[in-house]
Length: 130
Picture (cartoon, rainbow, N blue to C red):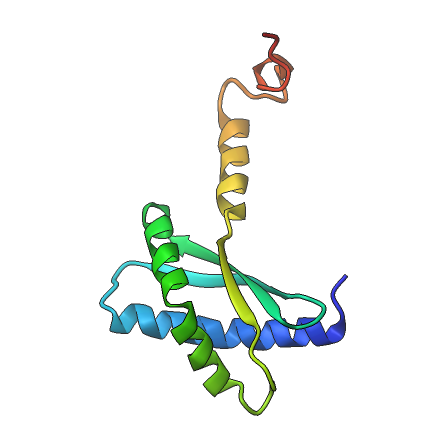
């Protein structure tokens, strides 16, 4: 369970990361790409921040994530400049893809098909006998 301090720092980092990443995307000439920060969770000692990104379209997600990871030092520096009056030390940033929307979409597509796994449990891969 996150403490109030962890939640507050996570919220501050999330707001500033959205601005930094969107500014970098528009100035870098990326058009038709949406990058959103879905969650930032900070460790108890406030040394590491795990940043979960939703990137649309999904086809470019891996490529953009690699670019963001390679520029982590610059992003961290920009965040430190923005939050210098709120945080003493900037946590290390770790970026991950948030695929929860894809997961939900996959469930919805499965439920709308004729071969609905709820109606026929034999369709589930776990239930198939080898």
